[in-house]
Every structure is written in C-alpha cells, then in structure tokens.
Length: 284
Image (cartoon, rainbow, N blue to C red; front, top):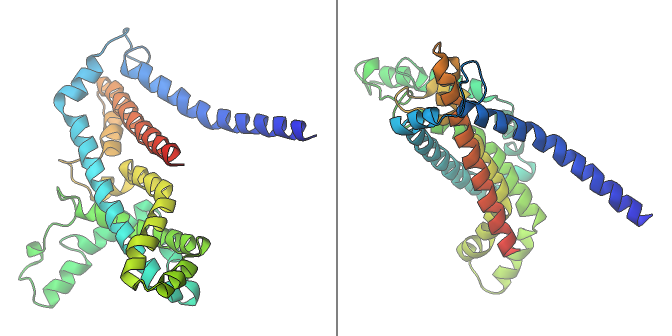
C-alpha cells in the first residue's frame, strides 16, 4: 500500500513538473530559435547577427545592469524597512491597526502603483504643488525630477511601496513560527541586550528563512514592466521595457533581437536560481 502511495505521489509530482516546465522550456526554445534566425517571418537560416547587434550596441548589457541596480536598491530598502516594522511594531502587527493597513497596498496592481507615484512626484504632481503653496519653490518647474529620471527614483519608490507590506507580513510570520520571542527571553536571561539579540539571533534567522522569497521578489522587480514603462527614463530602460519595444516596432528585423533579449534575461534568472539553490544544498 505504501509503495503504491509513493508511486502515485511520484507520478503526480512528475506530472506537475512536466506541466510547469514544458511551457517554459517550449517558450525558451522558440525564443532561441527565433534569435538565431531559425524560425519567424524573416527566418533565413542560422545566424548570430541578431546577437551581435544587441551585444555590439551595448543596449542589452546596459539594460541588464540598470535593471539589477533598480532591483538591488529597491529590495534592500524594502527589506530594511520591513525588518524595522516587524521587529519594532510587533504588537501593532499582532492586533493593532497596522495588521489591517498592511493588506491594503497588497491589493494595488503594479500599474496603479506606477500611476500613484506619477501623480505624486511629477513637476505638476501633488508634492510639487504642496511645495509651491508652502513657498519652498518659486515655480513648479523648480521641483526636482523624481520620475523619468536616470537614477530611477520613482521606479524604486513604487517597488518599495509594493514590497514593504508583503515583506513585513512575511518577517512577522517567520518571527512567530521560529518562536523568536522565546529565544529573546532566553537571551535576556543569559544577560544579552536587545541589540545583541537583534544582531546575532533575530536578523540572521529572519533573513535566512526569508531568503527564497527575497530572491523571487528581486527577480520580480528585475523583470518588471508596467512601473518602468510609466515612470522610467527612455534613456535608461529596464530589460522588460527594452524587449517589448523591440517586439512592438514596425521594423520586423528588431523582433529577433527582442527574442534574444528575452532569452538572455531568462538565462540570467535561471543562473541566479541555480546558484541560490546550489548554495542552499551546500549548507543543508
């Protein structure tokens, strides 16, 4: 009976893996074939020309570097803020208003968050008008460029606003599941201060347990499209925006380049996941 259950469980896991992996593998193979000129409307046979063009122009590498910068800064700020909220506002998260308010931003789609940041931070937005009425600036045009800027301030702010509620709830749940309140009591009985507990006990446990979620959210920001499209700079494009623009142009010769960009990004994501899980297995 147990062998039958194990066999059935194996088949179900295999079927799930097959259904999950086949579409991804099929899309990746089609993208590779298109980028090498083996399929598509203008396919003429195997060629590396499309890869030479995107690598030679530097657009792909610049876009990947810019996307990594945005994702790293956004996830770092969001993680720091979420840790602060989960560690210093535990009572409010347990039974206060904060435990309910954090769920509200989770219902906001990325496109809506982009519009909110746009309405807040443009030169004709809410903050610039408040600054003008308060006499801090002489003209609305004196307000700093916080959207469509090269540093991606607006993009980072939008992603931080989306990530902080999720990560705060995640850290709060981990804190409870790992019984960190008991470990805190033990450390206090042994004479350790609050700062020692936070630095050497709470933070390592929270970050290690949440590492897979942090990596997945980093990848989510890395491949985001709606927010950088709405409030990003045209001179500095994130990789998803660059790829979609290649697909949507009237020049059909740009389409294989779009596939090449998509394949390169997929390869980067798979490499990150491979390195992460390899490191996890090493420390298990």
